[in-house]
Image (cartoon, rainbow, N blue to C red):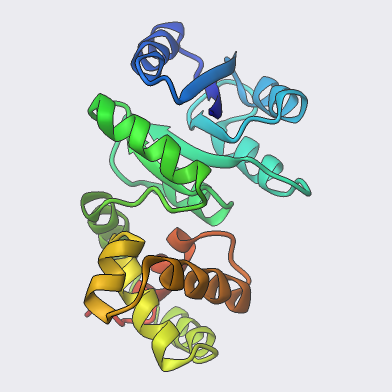
Length: 217
């Protein structure tokens, strides 16, 4: 059973997501919060596996709440819920450690799949959302950022580098394994090592670094 804390300042939005999630017997919502401060307090009390986090809320917003929770010793996985496509707030939440993001208009199956993926430690980054995210990164032409990113990635072995590039395309572990002739479990282990080497908490941050280094050009 995957436990979820739902965070949104709009009661109707919370009700809609709650209804969607309620149709999946393997997921249960353990609490609902209407702002970032309540989200932090309830997450620490209830210890959910996943927090579905709205970004724009009064008081402490979702970005600040994400950063606060991800700094905890045993943080929950956080999936950002947004009405918009990728913007500065989404990028800030990814940098703060969110596992990925979903549009509030996402199909019910996409929402439940994302929750389960996050709980399993995988990124919530479909090929479509990967494209949105990386298109946003491409708007930053800074050569210094590219050099810095390339230097960070130079710590990786050739195999790790190949896996990081495929992960940045939004592929699942099994899809990466098929392309590189590896077992899905081996891919997952490599990604864990990659994140450790780079000092990152999830593969979405790795994807951003790969794009900044120009490896998807």
